[in-house]
Length: 255
Image 1 (cartoon, helix red, strand yellow):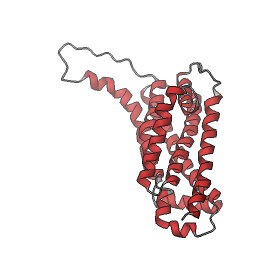
Image 2 (spheres, one colour):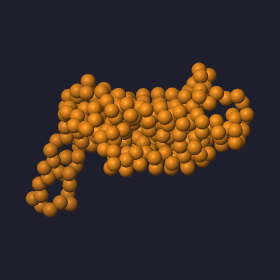
Image 3 (cartoon, rainbow, N blue to C red):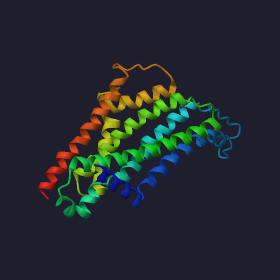
Image 4 (cartoon, rainbow, N blue to C red):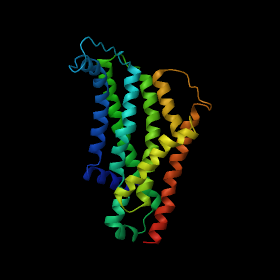
């Protein structure tokens, strides 16, 4: 396991996969508070409005800005994760598959090493972006409740763990990196958009609702206990990681 982990760290550094993740999360973290601060000024100075028009925009609150960062993570951040992770298994199998699968590879160690390195880099990048975004929020908007921020940040990391398990499963499912990205995107859209229509407040959708509740410091009103979406998301993540092992084992035998 340690050998595979070291190999994945080297690959992450050699291919500079960590750079787009850090860049995107930092950009999104900084952009949200600056946009919230400047938007009323930009709109009030617009020159194409009828004379006498008055636009009154309530100032953004700290919780709105911080949750807005998570909202951006849930859009552009997901795209960044897919672009970075879609070729981590599919691309490797295509380039060095014959050599790789001719060796007595421990598939469990192989999968866990890839997942661990990808998750650690993504989690650190998102926490860095959120921390910098919170700093700018405190300077531009108002005091940041840091204890609330880190509770929500930990929940986002749980959500991020699920996203990464989906992306790597898609990468293990097909041999084309671009196709893997498309499959991962479809699954994530299904889970984030379609599934809540019939299973609102549960699983990943419930986890995102819980993050919003924490930022607003309001009471959880879901039909299930607050821990339920956390536990079900972790279980789903573990199942998706575990599913990669028999899938890759089957592909090795059919190689």
